[in-house]
Length: 410
Image 1 (cartoon, rainbow, N blue to C red):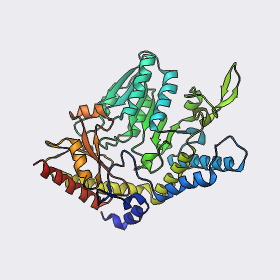
Image 2 (cartoon, one colour; image 1 turned 30 degrees about the vertical axis):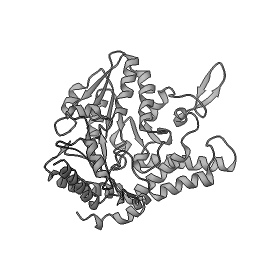
Image 3 (cartoon, one colour; image 1 turned 90 degrees about the vertical axis):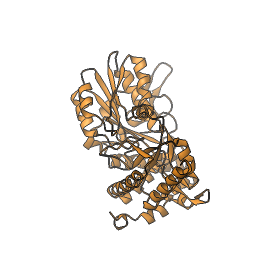
Image 4 (spheres, helix red, strand yellow; image 1 turned 60 degrees about the horizontal axis):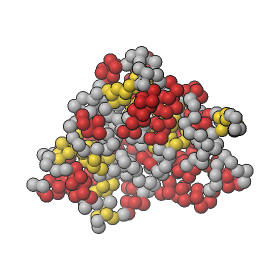
């Protein structure tokens, strides 16, 4: 597919000032968006403007700046609500990242609803942030954590999952897209089956939101989380979507200002809606920046972004597969634009260090997914993750730098 006919990649690259940067005297080739994405000028400008022209605390002041800041903050909430098609603004909670969103649900919903003997089902595809919070609440409540296996291609094993579901299953927490190997899980089938078993479902969508259109009404998730910095927004901002009827029954996760209705030394009553879970001064400017980032990807179109990235994924897979010493880890039928690989006789950290000298930024390590690494019997991998601003020249640069690694190690 000629992506230039449907996707103005050169214009998009100009939107990201960091691509004027050189690394070790070479043009930057950034292939680590799975860890954190770069920021377009519109987001940088929105953040700068919010601090320079409208900054004040939100929900507290009657003065002009506080009102202006509150309007921008809440406008971003509406942008995100519309983007994920949540039913109401009260179903969109700002947190500091996806990890905090998961911890909130585990501690609040899990703490209030889990009993000894109950089961929490995860999968071998999970990031540590969607494993450890559930282990912590399981230890407190007496619940048990189980994990759905994956096959040799990195596919979520749906039949095994269906066999694991039962009356003990209370919570299913799964990723939408694996951060380590790119597998796209059959999320609608997973959710439907969990609901049939009487369980609620949390979906970690941090790797999905930058690449796919996600619709809460369509997939039916009870909770959906993602982080802002992977969707071209600032760090320090995350989103928790929760169904209103579940959130209304959950106790607060943290106590403090702005989440209360009335405080006395005898008793405190709590605010309703999203405010109940947003204690203290929230990440005001970060939320404003995230709203701008969402507007930015929508101005391009997620369908176009997805098609462009799939084209890059196919090209990169083809090119890397031709290098004899390279082994791609995880080749699910449905994948996002992530390629995880090893090289025979070369430690991934050496791969990362050598390609960096060519200006190519990739990720190496266990990608905070050690159970997944154990499944493939590797300690770590090298990972290239593509985003909307990458092009075929980036793939060519990666392949050339990998060949130089091969030459160095013979």
